[in-house]
Length: 316
Image (cartoon, rainbow, N blue to C red; front, side):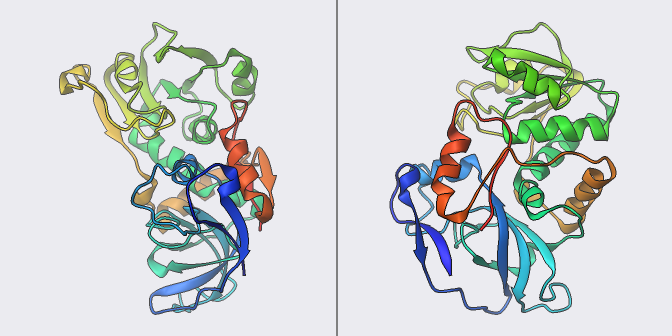
């Protein structure tokens, strides 16, 4: 099969298209024919050598969509079944989705029913499920106001679209470091785009729900804008900072809540609930850019570009 292999850290050029052996099925694992996968910032960190637990050579890719090609669980995962997979060591502990086929543990292969195209479905798993789970943890269903910190990222754009479906009356504020992206934010449903300057959102407003995607670098500032009884869900690490310096629990406003979300907690039911929400509300999940397998390196560069807005996918 063809696969994109990384043998050493580096830029996009470190991702090399090669002919490798198609994995052989083993007990508890099934072979998935990959029809599409999204590019994620965590994979860029790994490509750059910032994931010391990942050993090279490796086929990256922490998410993928496709069809069962060979199965060890014909009842749950019959050949030809449309499936998705996210996380669980995929592309890190074992080879992932940057390939024509991926051998994956049955426990993290989720059958799905959807009318989405492969390109659209490929844009959904990690990005939209991360947004969906984070919105649930931030109690957006009960919120009057929501702040999405890092709103122009793939997860940020997905969160804006999903939040309006989950709570049509919620008023959404979205932050960005670039004022020229205000119109794009408005177009996807953000009510009030605002600037994030020097790690501070340029507003005096407070919010019932906050989705923190920039991460540890800005979470203290986000907490200062959280209403009593509100929820701030720390999910992302766009700033590539993983610890909060000089953090004290007393920085959490009295009566407010700080929580987090990881897409590693995905279940088949939760994922299909999200797909149903997307289908019923005709949510636009179309990726911003698509590439073929030979240009996966270019796809990672596209996601890393300053003018990027939305999700990048590869269609093998």
